[in-house]
Amino acid sequence: MPNHDTPEAMKLRDFLKRYGISRSAAFEHMSCGRLKARRLGAHLLITTKDANDWLASLPVRSSSNQGKAA
Image (cartoon, rainbow, N blue to C red; front, side, top):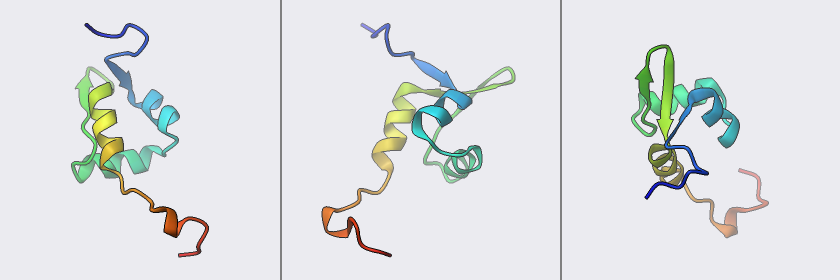
């Protein structure tokens, strides 16, 4: 049963705001296949599942690297 507090999909602008990334970064992730988007008319939609999959695909920063300059 779906959770009515969490939408099934969000517009691209809502995804950008939620995850704090730029539009160009999102399109980069889409072009390399890490982020899936669907078109509905003039809108790009990101499903909650695809957003969660994208988030899980990001590299994990180990605690030994925190606070050190690259």
